[in-house]
Length: 151
Image (cartoon, rainbow, N blue to C red):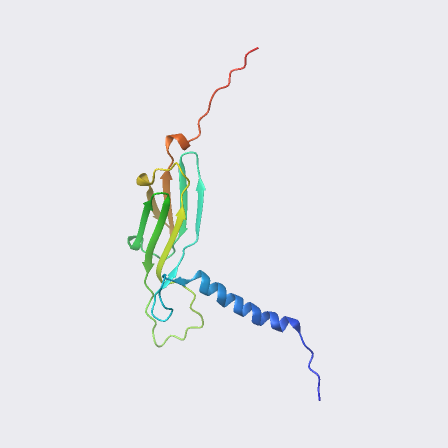
């Protein structure tokens, strides 16, 4: 009988594959209450959000998305970006080695800080980046006060 040396890193490769599948399933979800076999994929675009002195700025990465297929809504203090992208039709004579581009419906919601004017939000789209600017209320804007020194 021959002995086979056990390599613990072989077990880690299997664990990594399982974890990758778990995160793929978690991050690329389907709509609530929809079965995996019948529901279209729902994915979330990557975003960054920051504040300036006068605005709250949200930038979303939407490469290859037609801006006409994007809907932006502000309800209360929640900003929602929704839309869809259509998949290029698979051609039978193509022999795909990998298909990682995301297609289908996408949605992303985030809570805005208090003190913004959601009804005055403005959006622009350039080079696959959607930028939304939501102005702050006058109370939320920084004010400078001159301090007088008395002797």
